[in-house]
Image: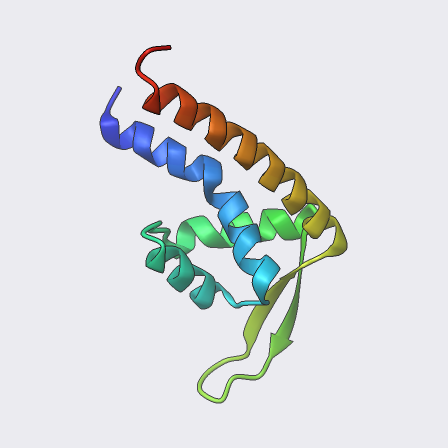
Length: 111
């Protein structure tokens, strides 16, 4: 097992949560989502993002709308649906519990 593979699997596991969290604040088009992920040091390529956005849309967690762009082709803006907001709330609870458990285990060497 390689370190790089383990790190990649850890990132993939939280990517959906991060994307939904980004879209909870504002609608965004894929380039904006990629930029926000990059700013957070979570590097994701388009080939990973687009299939995930499509799956989230097919699961009715996201919707999108087209908007004309002043420079170039129209942009597809993604937004959370009502179901997506409820799903995100559940993920936030799960993340909180998981984060607390992992921090407890990794920071307390006397367990």
